[in-house]
Image (cartoon, rainbow over all chains, first blue to last red; front, side, top):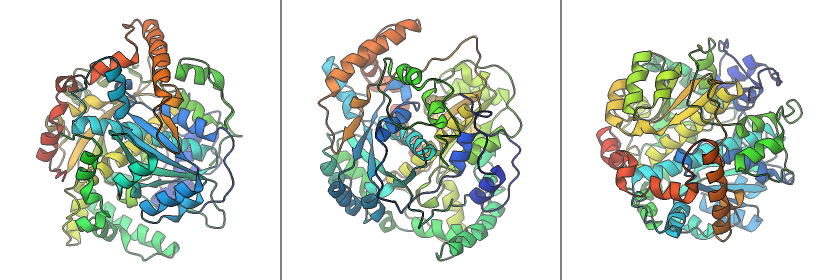
Length: 280
Length: 280
């Protein structure tokens, strides 16, 4: 339902947009409190050990389940990990990310074709449509839409979050740790907890919209200037965070330069096959 | 920012949960107006021809760009299609979905590795990390997180939306229509417009949470009862919509029974390779 009137922005829209893009922006469009929440997003990597209110997981899952799902197939699941030792082991499997150990809740989001296979099996049907890349992709998209609802829901409650792509570094070990059946794959994680105010997270600047938004057809013409502008803005942000001011172009070049820079995920096809995905 | 206090639910939480699950639910967790918006989600397949307020696309894109993106790589783009004839052609390519023609705005979300390749090329670097399934998956996830923010943002403004997976039926034709460069793939579409009140959309029931939410480790034990319950609830819903009351198990079985039921998407690997994705 619309919240344009019910929920006046508590932060200035101009301020939120300027932080998001690393520079002032025109902002003539419609707006809502929900959009305020989204624009305020910053990945949180330092958490208090404060417990979450009772029922938080259930609320986040209800929000996640309310996202669209292709043909209502619901080919995703989530494992809620609160046990500190398991969080510690998952932190190591994801490349030693301390915030997984620190946040009271870790959600492992699953692309999950195993439930569909069981359910169809119970009515005597073998699903010949399962072992295709398309079907894996449906599960991946379903999981991502669900997780993003949970993320925004958590942030609307004053909680912080951090996506963990490192959960794909060692998929078989993660599957063993979470007891996953064949056909289920932990596609990414999400830390959830109260941000530690001693280490405030900052909204990370994004490309100028003209580099990602195209009208009617793809047009790369405005990209060159937009990226040059963004290289400078991101360098300023990186400096403000005490990071090396490499800009964005170098960040992209370094992150994807070699297969080794994928942290083991260059072997994802083999791992997914071992987990029961056909990917045809 | 939290909106728990600023934005009291305008609909009853109990009503929203009962519609989402097709039966009353306990609801003791924390809540917000943003979560109200999410729980109210229903895919809209009938639109008024009312134009969107000026600046709507820019607001939706700012929300989309505020979603998390792996390593700030921002490997997604979006093509905003307003031209009625192009929407008509895309409607045909997506399997004849009339609502693409009807809604004033169609957003084609792209998994886009082409920008990263151009940007790294400009600093003299060849990205050997590009032709991997992992990198395609990062782009797919980035696009989905962005699109879901845009979706919830649109709904918070009183607009309706509908995801269009049918955009993957004929990926090469869609790429030609949108003028996509190699390395860009239209992963799904999104209709955006004002819902036609003459054809109100209903929230589609989802599986009981115990079928998708696992604690500490995956546990399929509660699934059988949950699915039986859900088969009955979904049949009731289907009947209320004038649809065949097949329940959920049969829906899953029918949707994925054969490769032919994937509407051409069983050839997605070949299409992606033709579009420049390595998928190694």
